[in-house]
Image (cartoon, rainbow, N blue to C red; front, side):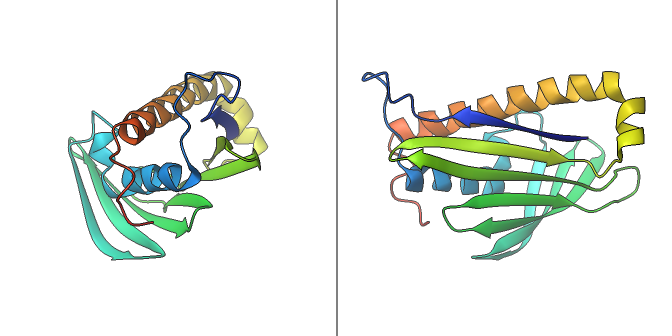
Length: 160
């Protein structure tokens, strides 16, 4: 299943909405990678085994299930999650890309790929519809948390 969607960050037509800057949004997306428990309530533990300015290796634990992934960072552009096939978990990826078609008009494009071909996607269409809905809801929630952190000033002093 390949699935992508945009989430608007700043509604420039609403003067009452706090305008998040690109740097704040970037810091929030990186914080989601470095401290995923702030964003995923059902995550039991997250351990970063390696970290550089270009990315990190992590192990996430959901009850008995452990998932290893690699996160790549492109400064102020995107955060890319790669999950290699492991045990009962197939290969998958997620890229969160910042888009700014005009000054302060920020969006995040969430692009998912579970590595399945068109035939597998057709066989799993009912399940995939549920997954698309769950992914969309989780992504909107991610932006909600980033907005709350930005409005509280918590994304102003973190390093880019």
